[in-house]
Structures are given as C-alpha cells and as structure tokens.
Amino acid sequence: MTPRIIRTLDPAEVGTLVDWAAGEGWNPGLDDAAAFSAADPEGFLGAFVDGDMLAGICAVRYGVSYGFIGLYISHPDHRGEGHGKAVWDAGMARLSGRIVGLDGVDAQFDNYLSKGFVPAYRTIRFGGRFSPVGEGVDVGVPRPVDFTPALLEEAITFDGKIFPQPRRAFLERWLAPPHIVSVAVSGGRMAGYGVMRACGVGSKIGCLAAIDLPTAKALFVSLADQAEGEVFIDVPQPQGEFARFLAASNLVPGFETTRMYHGGAIPLYSGLFGVTTLELG
Image 1 (tube, one colour):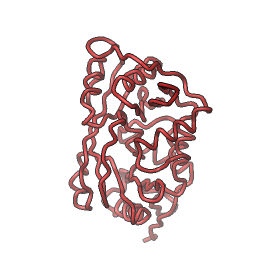
Image 2 (tube, helix red, strand yellow):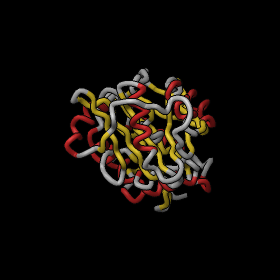
Image 3 (tube, helix red, strand yellow):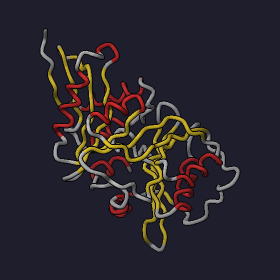
Image 4 (tube, helix red, strand yellow):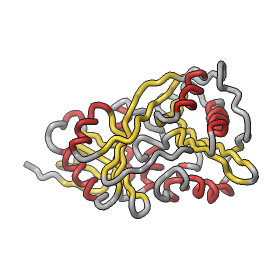
C-alpha cells in the first residue's frame, strides 16, 4: 500500500479544503481560502496518498501561546481509513504547548471531550433576511462609518481586546476588499468594528466586536443593510440581549457549535458579539 504523506497545503489545496467545507454545508465565504492562508501559511495540513488529498485540517498559530483547530474534514470516500486521525495528530503536534481552541459540531462533541477539550460556551448561528422591525431595532449611536486603510492600526489594537493573541497578518487581509467593513468611532476612538463577506449562500458577518450592545447593534445594521439576500452571524450564547435583537430583526437560530479549549481556559470577551469564523476562531 502506498504510504500516507502529511504535508503543508499550498494555496490551491487550501481552496480545495474550503470547498470540502462548503460540501459539508458549512457555507464558507467565497474568498475564505486566501484570507485563511494569510493567518498562518504553514497552518494547513493534508493527508495524501498517491498525490490525492484524503483529509485536511487547519492548525493555526496565533502569537506565542494560542492556536486554533478547524476545517477538520476527511473526504467522504475515504472516511474510516485513518487519514482524519493522522491530520488531527499532526495539527495538535504543531500546536503543542499552546492553548488550543475549536468550535465543535455536536456530532464530534464526545470525541473532542475524549481528547481533553473542555467546553466553554455554545455558539448559535442566526440567519435570515434582515428586517429592522419590532423591539430593539432603535440602535442609537455611535453611527458606523466605512473602514479605510488609515484605520487599520486602530482596528488591530481594538481586536486585541476581543481575541487572545495578535493576528495582524490575518486582519490585514480580512479587513480588505472584497469584504465590507464598518467601524464605530466614539470620542475620537474606535468603539467597534464589523466585517461582512459573501458566502455560497447569502453573506456572513464576523467578526463583530463593540464596546457595548448599542454599538454592536449599530454595526450589525450598517452591514446587514448592505447584504444581498440572507445574512448570517455566529453569536456566543452569553450574548442573549444581542440574540434577542437579531430575532426581532427576522433572523432565526439554526446551526450550533460548542467552543472548546485544550491546555487552558480563555474567557469569553464581553465585547465579542459575532465570531470571526468557526474555522479560525
């Protein structure tokens, strides 16, 4: 039997892995492969036999002490052959010594528990055609404005308040076109930012981060008003008031995951209203 090879994926192969995610119904962004690769170009691994990729995973390093596991997929025709375990082991080895996070689907919850991951909170995907009606749609101030490159450093600094380690390379790509980015400024200082990207179905908003609930609502509305079709956002369950605002705006809860950590705990940042991506944290 031809031996299995585990190696780093090239950009085109990262694109294939993202396509697999679309096939699983995860609805990734149309431009996700390029943006994901910017986070950690060496952080995407695949299992290959005879040159064919049979399983893949991302094991992205952030800073010196944090990592994230995502895009953990085996090709449907080759499940049960050990390729998934092989890339999992390689990914976890790459993140050795770090706190490791993931957003696990319910079907894999017990599996991740058995590997030493501890649940932190649920994440709920809200989706639908945004309709600003009902209680909670009077979002107040500050009024969001379009992001410009001149605001990049402020955005990176603000992101440090809601993400455990720096992710400059990723944000430089994530905050750039074709993504739509809104920022809130209060008292001459950044008070929040939100990003929307086109997906296979509708658009997703994430990250959505703000100093308070009214600012988060304002950012969401500024982005959702620009969406063509349905809009989706992955909301940490503790953000109950924000979830009620979304429900009043015609978005319904659907797909759920559990944020889990291995090697330590990371508290949920109070200013995080929408997860950046379930694949990269």
